[in-house]
Image 1 (cartoon, rainbow, N blue to C red):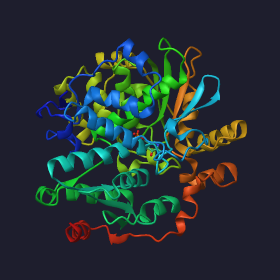
Image 2 (image 1 turned 30 degrees about the horizontal axis):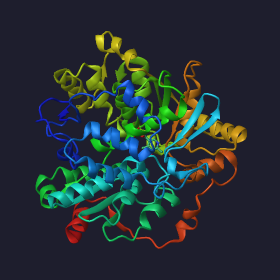
Image 3 (image 1 turned 45 degrees about the vertical axis):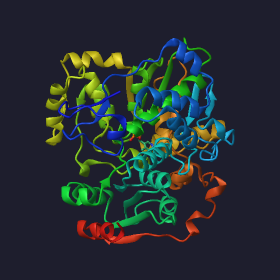
Image 4 (image 1 turned 45 degrees about the horizontal axis):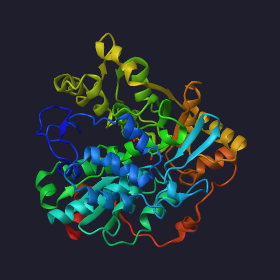
Length: 475
Ligand SMILES: *Cc1c(COP(=O)(O)O)cnc(C)c1O
């Protein structure tokens, strides 16, 4: 299996070669040169597999440069009950992603039972083990530099903590994350984890990461890498739970399922698109946004109009507060029939700060064939949905999942079950839970008193040089 760039001007690469990198050299995103297909016989055989075994089957279809026995070891280690033990509904953690039925034909797929209580653990944990394995084989090391507004940074740190050959330098906006999120990150004591709080906003932190990463000399000298959402292995790891969720919500492989996905950078739902392209019977992919509705606008109109960062709304589902969706290029590449020249033409407009419009083109006519529908949610919808699910089912959902439940209800189809992906646990967003329910969210007991633990963080000005100095000092 080789991987090609959406922009068509990069050499095909193997899985391990793209694992540690980000963008392709031509500025595109990597995708497999074709999607491996799943036969009816395989689908039948996979139905009853435990999560780690299912993950291995799927990884084997995309990875041909790691021996199968080693991949098995990595998948077993990653998807073990003792890592995914924060089971929200208190059931068997060995399930990794249990399905909770709210009403007949309407389910939540719990993806937030991992160490940081958000679905990003599902992929990041695998990435941690893959990085360690590949770096060891090659005798290399890497220094991961990232910026976070919450979920990504903690998932990356928990996946990389204590790993040989990996250091993590994670920038966050000083004082802007919730007390719980700060405690999660800053209380880590492993010497390979460096928390850097930047006096400023998330965008200031992000700009510093971009500036450091575009200094080619510094980047090479200090072996700077990234684990952001365009990383192919992260998308691949997420394909697995669409299969798991499909099997959990159906009793036979003749049925179709709809998945509703609270979306920001289009990474999670892109994995759903890939599962569908592999032949999993997904009838609908329902994309839910918050007030930052650039993707909802596209699926309704055919116009993709990324916003300026200054136009981005700060919302109570903050992990979906995006101005442009970094993985969307992967889907559009498929939509335009994998025509890299067409893709380059569209993204020349996006990269210049503009928009593109597919109205009146054959591409828009092809869109319904990909199964997407969409909707948006607001703060008031979020509160009402959290309250409704709590009052009727005594299940506490987080703000992002609430956006999903709200939009999913607008796209119910009696012929197929609806599975809403639960992307985080409520405790991460306690302010909004208080506002909706007048009570504190349920907290898994490992997290009792986490805010009182000693914290390790360097506070710096929004200065590229100060961040570079911290890296230089510690590498
Ligand atoms: C990251 C995140 C999302 C958005 O996922 P994308 O892959 O960026 O679309 C939604 N909900 C939560 C809780 C997240 O952390």
